[in-house]
Length: 394
Image 1 (cartoon, rainbow, N blue to C red):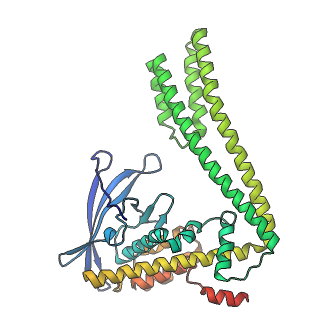
Image 2 (cartoon, one colour):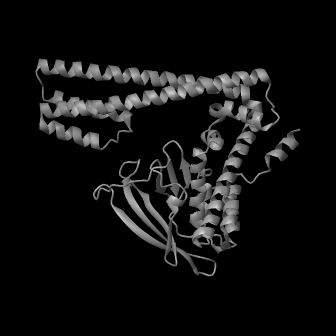
Image 3 (cartoon, rainbow, N blue to C red):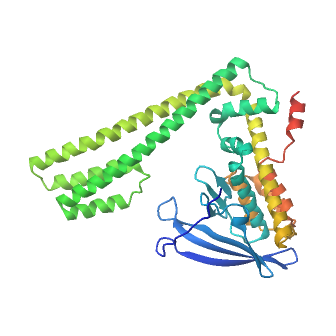
């Protein structure tokens, strides 16, 4: 059961803006008008903002359809983010990155990414969605089980496969443990900042100003810089020659907060060491089978990409059938949109990718179906079907 996205905009923290785009066909005749409303939010990087879709409407002859609602992307669990450079679906944060609807091609790219988001809700596709893009160590067990289910001939001896599965499971356990430790480390760091600010203000407001300046110039993600402003603060205090009682309090406080933080740092360091050891053993055992594993992984990715394209085309046909909005017509190609199809897998673009893009863009005109077929090729997803792969191996 979906929940409608409810926005309570904050004029200062989340200003919004509307924009209208005329989406035209190859003859420059308007097919429909896209009206979008964006909310501005703080981005993950310090000082950077990002635009969030609050509304995405397609209109023709007075009839409007909410594209987010029509595709199920208005569910409150999703955040639809504007990204003209690298469209993708991030299942970890339930964020869908899509381009602004500058052309009909951008609408198709958006529908394709919505298809990936829908896959994640589909029990038949969720496992493959969760394991795409992972390293061979991380998804080895999944790949083996998938290959068995699909009847793909295996090239790995049984005893080697068993040990690699054990390593993969241990690696996953260590990854989960590390994520938990990093979360705890961040909490400790936030508490340290809070305490040191309070301590500084109680000692001398002037020192508090210095501490604030140092803290504000170092985002929370840069935990390694903690010592830098921690010791800057204590240098300030010591320079004023505090009495012995205050010095004892400072030293006691320093020991207390350092102990917990250092303990976590040691655990994280040990975790990293253990993960590196497992990876070394994995790749030593799997070296001669890696090409086969990557082939299997590409088969999984190919299935996901083709299915996301299938879902996109179904939505496009529904728009035509139910709302008379025909986005399946031929339109003019936007090179920037085409480049974005390669950005997730190739950064910067290789010379070969540039040539492929140039060859496609030379046509100047394409349909949404042709664009999505080209997108499949950019992911190596327009490969031989699974049946042909099995026949080749046999």
